[in-house]
Image 1 (tube, one colour):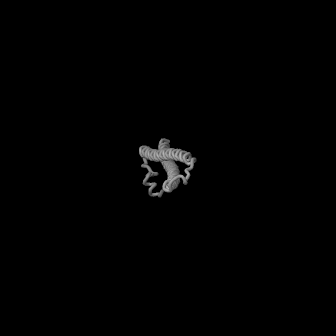
Image 2 (cartoon, rainbow, N blue to C red):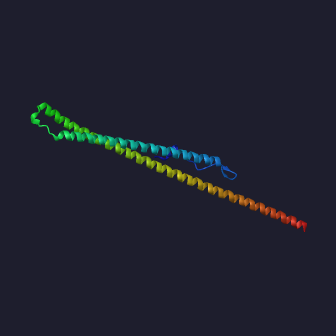
Image 3 (tube, rainbow, N blue to C red):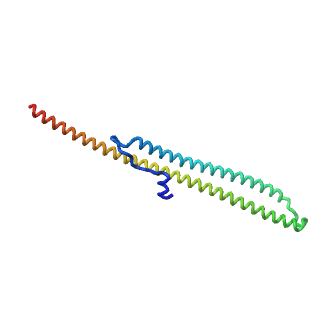
Length: 183
């Protein structure tokens, strides 16, 4: 997944509008709500893929059971071998062709079943990896946003402290001037 497609999927931002006492609460709440909605979509997609993989696995099992039943039936039929000498040449050829076709059908069914299972497993792994990557990206973005918010809050507190100290010094100086006048 390219960086460009990641930004299109979840446009993450790490800045918020500043207000008197920190970030705009509505912007942060909206941002977190958007992230939660995206995470729910990714989770729903993963769950749907898992359900599809389960359905394909179930389908494969039923095809395998049907295949086993057909093989058992064929095996029972084949236990009583047909004497080719007793059959006309044309029927013997038809039996040989039918046997060859049976082997091909079984081989094709087994290959298709293996392909279906492989594709389903590969898709499930890919979706799990994508979901894990997405969760990690969201966690990292949230951590960075909170770190930046803490740093900004600390800067704002330091500014307020400096303003308060300056104001206190000014008031003390005025008080000293007034005290000197009174004396």
